[in-house]
Each structure stands twice: as structure tokens, then as C-alpha cells.
Image 1 (spheres, rainbow, N blue to C red):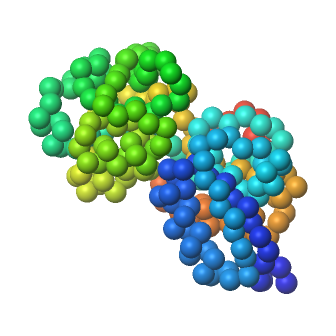
Image 2 (cartoon, rainbow, N blue to C red):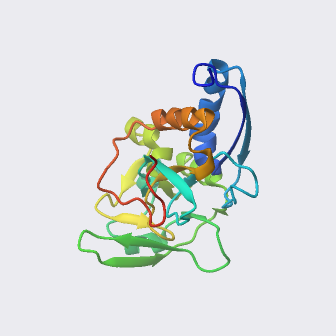
Length: 231
């Protein structure tokens, strides 16, 4: 009966940017389709302890390492350098990563040190470029909005600006490199506790999360160490 008509409360946590762009719209549709389910949605950029906070599903980004949990990859996540055509037209030419040091780079604030963007080429060689600009924030949506407005260069997840890239509002720079401000991202994951794996509500919600991301998965990409594939 639970499989046919799921009910009860789901506690969901998500990173802010992916939550705002993907999870919130999906939650609305999900609750309209399953009126007997209630969702408590929490959003932050903190890494939460699922057991301590009684979280059923956590939407996480990047490298993961916790063998007590199960993770299902929703999509790969690659950071890209991008800007509006207007910004590029009025600014100095950008031909190589080192040129970014002279540009207005909108940066993510995660410590008090100097911000570096790391570029990895096809030969496995890395180049670290110190960047700075007029806006530094720990809020992904703010950096995304400022980049789309033409303030400067953003280092953003590809999935967060897919529509703007396809529509020509943004231009991707350095497509031949992988880029990051910390570790290189592996993807977006739905993470849940082993004892929630058989819950019909959890499985149903995770299945709906998977449908949100239409980018084909690279099955050869590694699942982060410590995370078993879902059964």
C-alpha cells in the first residue's frame, strides 16, 4: 500500500544554488503529485550530519567521503569560467588563464586567504591563477546573478548556467581546461543513510531528483571513495 500511496514526512537538505535552481521547483511538483507526503526542506552550504539532523536525503556537490552513507549520482558537475558578451567586448582580451589576473573575477568566499582558480589541461598539468574582483561572496546565487548581469567573470557550475550558455547570454572561456577554486568536482549526489535505503518515500524522491538532470551521465566517472553504489 505504501508503494501505491506514499505518505509521511521527508526531511531534505540541499546546497543553496542547486536547491534554488532545481530542488525547490521539483519539490513543489512532487508535493502536488503526492499530497500525503510532507517535506521539510533545509538549504545551506554546510556539510550536515544526516543522522544527527534526521535528514532523509541530502543533495551534495563535489568530492564525498563517508562510507556509512549511500550516494546516487544525479549528474556530473564541472565548473566553468564564463562572462557576458558585453563584459568581454569592453575588457582586455583573454587568451590564456594568466590573463585573468587583470580582470574583474567574481569569487567564492570560503576562507580569508587569496583566491586562486586552478586550471588542469589535457596533459594533467595545473596552472594556479590568483584572481580578485569587486564581488566576493559565499552565496552561489549572488555570484551567478552578478555574472549574468555582466559585472565580471564567474567560475560557476555548468548546470547552473546551461540555459544562459545555450541562449548566448553567457560565453564559456577555456573549454579545453577543467577549472576549480578548490578540489575538482565529481558531480551532484543524492545522499542518504543506509537504514533509509528501503524507504518508499526516499526512493521515490531520489528517482524524481534523477529526472531533473537531463545531462547524460558518464558511467566511467568514479564514484567518490567510500560511497557504495545504491543497490
